[in-house]
Image 1 (cartoon, rainbow over the protein chains, first blue to last red):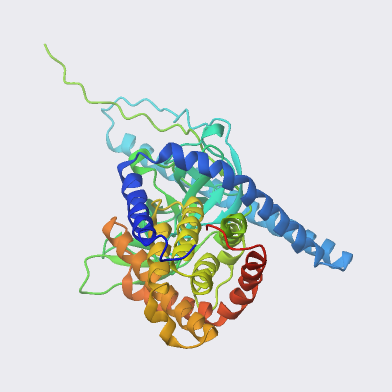
Image 2: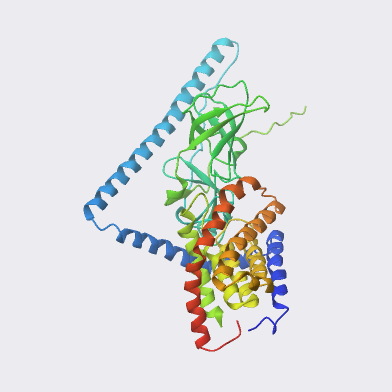
Length: 294
Length: 167
């Protein structure tokens, strides 16, 4: 084939490419993308599996491998215990604090009638467990590709966590057997958070270089290094209490209205192998205010 | 005829880029395997075949991205359109032409990417993107272009032995 024989082909391809983008934005390409992803998904899974196999062959000394596995196992146990510790701290310290405040409230208001209640229905359904098969090919997005999709009950917006209660991100796009997870350090990600000890609130955003920044911290708030950052559950999009990381440093410019904290992520997103998608989580019910009529 | 091996090469290239090469960063940049392949094929085989490879490679990369479908396709089609223009032949022998177009093509592809993402409301930080991602990627792809050429010229010679055919 020569250029002379089909001079119109380059222009047809240019127009077709632009049309693809336009049709995607119009939302009519979904079924075609799903069909094409059925072709790509097995290749991606096979390649990821092949990569793991080839990687294993390079570890020629059996003892070194066993030792490495043991270290990894201890690391996993350590991570799980650390996260569990944080979760328990979050659960009991915060609960203790709240109960103390309630007790003070009752003492300060002796004429009130109060009824104590537990928050119920925070349980979750069966979670699809996804294996990480690849990273996003778009260098400006920080997404992961996992091998569960709409066939497994996964939908856009669902939270994705790693071992324990560490937040990885949210589902951004779903194919029948693949899902694309927007990581919390993606430049387009925003998560409402709290500092575990001081209960200072803010928003955690991602940056192009993969950094995690907590913004919108009021200037009069005191933020200490190494404080644990957890989801606040505000807005109902994410469960409360999922760990994002720890405060590494705090900066405040007088020209800006808010303080900013640089966070140390709780996870190395590039080394994750398995994640869990939370398909449903209970939220504390918000009662609508109904005006009583006489 | 190049599509018989072009489809598997580009598909495997896109998957490799997603599974392995996304973990490889040198000075913050990553090699773009599919981009290298389509530029190399355009230099070897000309505008039309290069653009068909650009279209296919773009679709495969878009399938492995959570971003808007078509970003890679438009970027690669634009790059191959430029790499296949007659003035590129004046840049010197094939190896020099390929190395220069790999660097320039990477720059153009990423710039197209950034413009389209900006238009679609993603608004990446342009300055940081050029400093930390694009310039290292330009350098990496420039250095890797001879390897891509050695790999694809084998298929080019195979197809010539089997006789010329459409695409």
